[in-house]
Image (cartoon, rainbow, N blue to C red; front, side, top):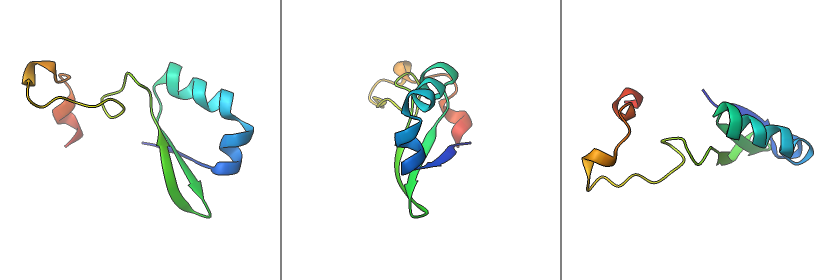
Length: 67
């Protein structure tokens, strides 16, 4: 599940939130006026990087658990 923060909270706590994403592999949704604007994810997460579906051997083993 994603953690939702306001754009103001993101600006004020960027370092802490960045650590949560990088170290704890959390996902953060940034919103302004109650509307989601962006998502901050780890480069190592399956949702953060781009997947190459041309070679199924490159897919993470747990990719199908998301569906």
